[in-house]
Image (tube, rainbow, N blue to C red; front, side, top):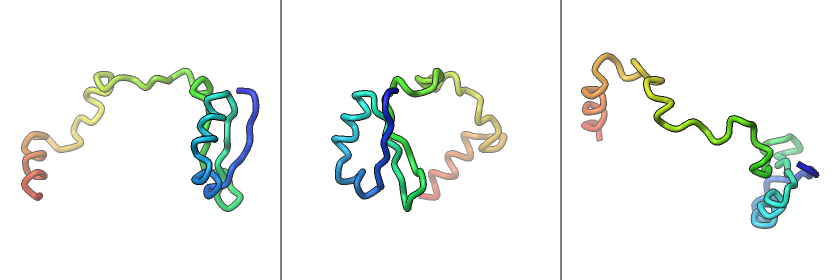
Amino acid sequence: MSKRSSSGVEKTRQQQLSLLDRAHAGQAVIITRRGMSYAALAPIEALPDAWPRPSVVALRGSGRGLLGKDAAAEVIRMRNEW
């Protein structure tokens, strides 16, 4: 990543296409809100080595027990609420 600049939220809204082009060209943009860092727009190459994220299959079982012992019944119950 070569350069960095900052942009306020309103300026970011007005110039989002040009900011995306700058990020694609290698320049990170820190988006500020009320003078505080709020978010960053950076080139994809600047992302951590963990990118791309793991597939959904890798997350299998990570929510085990979240819906109770009978997940299927809980999903049916929630659908019936609608």
